[in-house]
Length: 75
Image (cartoon, rainbow, N blue to C red; front, side, top):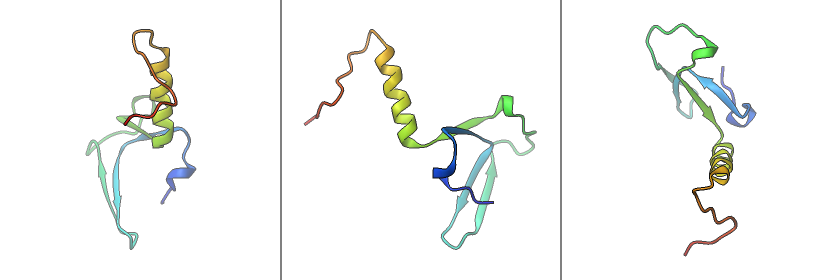
């Protein structure tokens, strides 16, 4: 089953990686060859880049020891 990335929630558990070529053939590689899927102990997560970047910025803004320059161009 192919799930489109933009249809995923903020993040989802990841149990391996699938490489899919344009003709639809897939190579599925699990993180662990004999894993038992347990949502409490997912070996990894994936999220959209925009969501991850926003998460990082919001975390940095919470830190009093980091000076964050919002809406600033770097040349």
